[in-house]
Length: 344
Ligand code: NAD
Ligand code: TYD
Image (cartoon, rainbow, N blue to C red):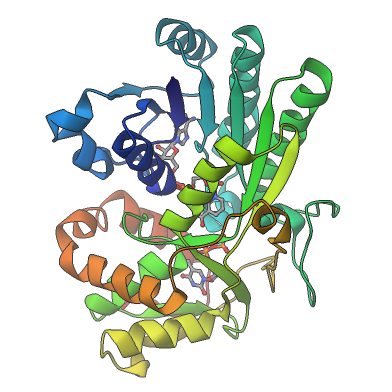
């Protein structure tokens, strides 16, 4: 069996590629190596010949139809797991072009390749953000999608296409909607990775608005284990929420990070809120749990070990936090009222 893992040089995709190679499954990663793609995330495989025999890396764009066709045919791909995406809400607010291209058109190209080549399983990695914000209670898979920012709208578009290829062409799809992931190798622009690395460097932690927005946190290895579980046990044409039920406010997460690193609360900087900021994400994971899956990582242990990873792997992130990363932050905060000079 050969699994095509798109976006496999990114945060979650690289953890999934490592998991499958560890199981001695043949993995082909297709990744464009955007700002978020990092070949070092695959070192554990590529620098170990006992693992690299199961692995191939192709640099390329999922929107490149001839390339996708060639890889699927020549590598005899049976399974596609589509992690490739532009994934950061703030970037989608500044410019959504690449979100529309990769998240929607790229998914279409992959679905076409799956249709033409009798792919046995197609997993579309989606997000809880497609539901939009919820004040109380939790979204179930059957609820109406109500994405509220360009990122989540592009992911919802991809989902609708994925479902259409199931209904119309019987491409054997499964859609996963995971909550916010955290863990090693996350590009330091998301809440957890940005705040941990900023705190280590004694830089400000920019909390948007009142910081009382709620996210549901899941360790990346638990998400990958759930996707893997669904490869075996998921039903074609179905959607599955993935969550460990760890809802926290952003300020709670911020305080945990500062306490764990023994850094002062004065590093917290309240900045202007994100436009269209979703207040609370919450999903009901009982459908997946009823199949027998459960998370393996305790929330506190997961956060503690993640912080430790960033402390011990400063080499991995410190070189990322220069150049393009700083340019992005300068652009992002240009229009904000708060003076963030100490942040960059
Ligand atoms: P990431 O931004 O870390 O990685 C994305 C990867 O996709 C990068 O390696 C990038 O180079 C690659 N890529 C981007 N455009 C591409 C293209 N056109 N062709 C080929 N490769 C391309 O993202 P992540 O956090 O690992 O997220 C992976 C997936 O999981 C995404 O689909 C995202 O929507 C979804 N998801 C993420 C989270 C989260 O908390 N991070 C939560 C739920 C769902
Ligand atoms: P993020 O990690 O961008 O994930 P998402 O918006 O996709 O859930 O943000 C998580 C939460 O943290 C979200 O409510 C926005 C907030 N946030 C900040 O307060 N400051 C920041 O610098 C970032 C990146 C996020």
